Length: 101
Image 1 (cartoon, rainbow, N blue to C red):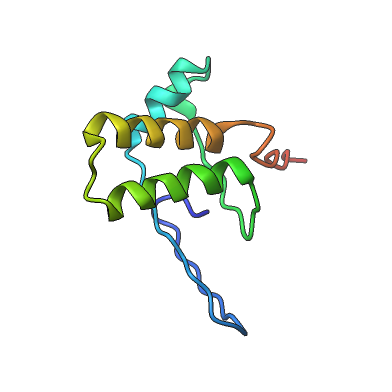
Image 2: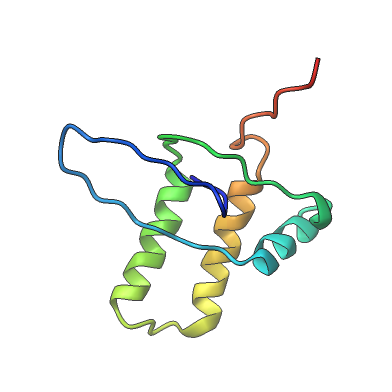
């Protein structure tokens, strides 16, 4: 997972598939506000090779919705995006930020 503006590169020994999902700042702020966080100070940390079953299910649902031509409409896609934003902002999923010494 890479926050906006972050670039990275890696090399795979075997074939793999990636799904790229972008969330708007307004959706992230809404998720933060609705879960009691300060939307003015939200941060999605950069994480590599995180295996989170809930994130995977939400992203697969988004991919399936897109592949089917978005039959659920904007509300369905936005709801999945909001669920993903809530999960990404969850402090249990997000590793704690290192404290300055």
